[in-house]
Length: 124
Image (tube, rainbow, N blue to C red; front, side):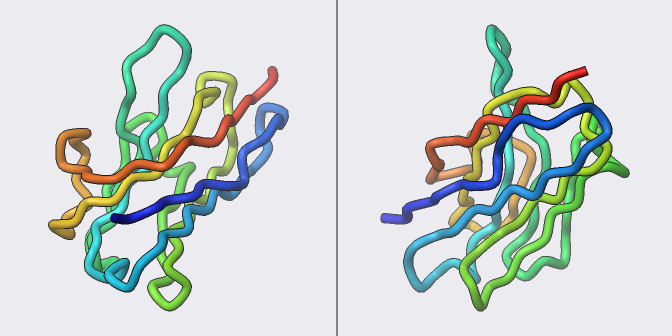
């Protein structure tokens, strides 16, 4: 069983930055692909970014490409999502997820474990 704990969300103004963190339990973190998804009210959960087990492959949704950066520190069992130039449309609950097959794909169905989520609110 893998437990994921997100942190770093909050209320910011448009143009500001936030860094989300996701800390994972267990010894196998370095073999997991990791992803971030978000869900706004009345909308489906959508892919934000994913990273492979070794960090060699990173993917981004078109809506965040160039503004968000995903990276991982396997020594700390943690993955980070640096979010710059935030906009009101980035407002959502952000979820961290683990893909035990290691890919870190953009598909919800690829992920086996999910965190509880952290709220990000961007005011205009």
